[in-house]
Length: 418
Ligand SMILES: Cc1cc2nc3c(=O)[nH]c(=O)nc-3n(C[C@H](O)[C@H](O)[C@H](O)COP(=O)(O)OP(=O)(O)OC[C@H]3O[C@@H](n4cnc5c(N)ncnc54)[C@H](O)[C@@H]3O)c2cc1C
Ligand code: SF4
Ligand code: SF4
Ligand code: SF4
Image (cartoon, rainbow, N blue to C red):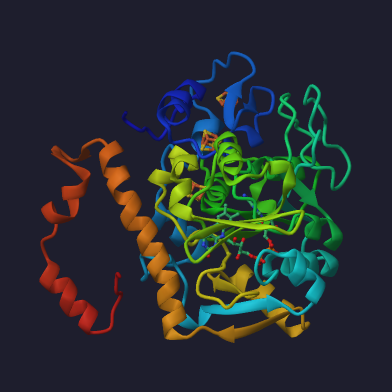
């Protein structure tokens, strides 16, 4: 399937949605609710659209994505570390946690994301933060036509299906308490960028988005689009989460049944040291090797080449940090300023990561990238450069002239690619 740099909803369907590439990030529908809605974790068209060049195609992170162009535009420079993406120096990678114990208790790891967003909202640096909330039983039932008026009301965009328990839904939080209500990781996918559409529609001017690498990629495409302006300069901060994969809800439910529980009985999910851990409301802890959840993973995640939310202002994950702490990578000035203010106000405490801990972060990024490269090559078409057509996996080899020169440059301490 040839990918283009312009297309419409039919191209989006053919190249992404029916081609196993859709990661259910919500970006395509966020700014076109008239035509696009979501059912069973996929975009569907509400009515026939005759546009030739569509924002949905332009914004989707899975139609085309130019990593170095985005880095130049967002960070003003390109990466030296191909495993973790752009950051200025290794001092920008550290471990952190919320100083407030109640935030830590609600957060997935160190509660860093929730503490930071709550603080920035209270300070007036932000007026809205799009987080992901788990639905409660019965929530979202009905026709799914809500308007989402008012603040902190979720997206108001029911799927028309009725979301079950633990379905991850975008939520526009405007207070610290609302941010905390969304704390914790949901390991199923959330169409978070839909929440950005809502926040902008409601007129917020200083918006933050918390999202997985694919959400952040979608958001950057919206911000940097040359063809469509939806006011995305009002998104001031993108907080990314590390991500290896997400699970499809129907398959996750079947897996939970095998483990002897039901989604309605789950208190918290966690992934630690290769184990998927389910804490039930009754206080039981069920564990299974994460590789046994292989058949629950969304196909689109097999083609994902971003572990560390490489295009976010700052990225947060658990790998590399002690229990109850989070690993943070600060990438941009807005990211740096947010962390600095929170640290100075005593909201966050930070510490250095050891070499060994840093290697653990790189190790997991490498594991994901290496593993997915095979699926990417299998799916990809030959690459055409001028008249030359080359299999993608042979590109490096074919154009690998000048290796010696590059090596010399590296020795002189210039840009180094890992
Ligand atoms: C699907 C998924 C996969 C992950 N995989 C890894 C991994 O392989 N390795 C690793 O080191 N870390 C991974 N993480 C990150 C880790 O689980 C924590 O989110 C991170 O350490 C931040 O912890 P915290 O206590 O600071 O965040 P918290 O204060 O708990 O805040 C987390 C924020 O993330 C939002 N959120 C939760 N789930 C989702 C979702 N599905 N989509 C969008 N936003 C969401 C919440 O609304 C909240 O705002 C993953 C997270 C998710 C959601
Ligand atoms: S109106 Fe534009 S964004 Fe909406 S479906 Fe049509 S092409 Fe896509
Ligand atoms: S924008 Fe996101 S939800 Fe829409 S088709 Fe692309 S990957 Fe899927
Ligand atoms: S693996 Fe990639 S595509 Fe899948 S949820 Fe994570 S960031 Fe999105």
